[in-house]
Image (cartoon, rainbow, N blue to C red):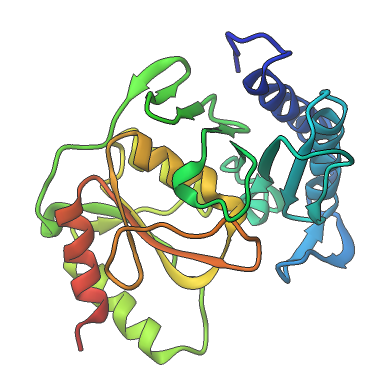
Length: 277
């Protein structure tokens, strides 16, 4: 992973935080299956490396000289000591179950925005998603598009739903409506691919490798906002569960529900399958 930026800039600090977290994970893979015995604020069991990677990233952020309010997977909200300049949202390991099973598909994602009350997903200024083992570093800058390893990427060309290859997160039990709706979508597209790292799947939509990524479980925390930011900046269209353009508060109490697609037509086609009976 290379960063062509001054470490004193906000972007440089975010890259430094990612580098610190990655070092912890890559140098301690023998501990990949170890758990802390605790649950994070979102109800998931915490891996030891999740916690340690997050701690390493937070240390970089808090010693950067910037006043940051930090939203994390394991610790929740960490307020700044002084007047807050930036909101930073970080997911240290997306794809923890993969890491635990030695499947080399997991990512770290981080997003930042100048701080003000009532921030929304539309106001994210920069996001970085780095894949731990596949040598992919995606950067989205507001109004400037997306790069992968420094080269511009964009979403796939529009295609009809029956030709689309999508990622679909089906990890939800005990909901018969969701199960039926999910089957309609799977039957309506050409095929489904899923890495079990939603951030990586969203980056692959942004890079035109997948046509869409769908998560309508009402279970995905806001810490995954770096992924939806990628799709938006790469020219894609994100639809909310109600059928309108996706925009939501960056408050950590809310869960993300979206259809992130290469274009609005495909997103609407997927949504129609979901809500039809």
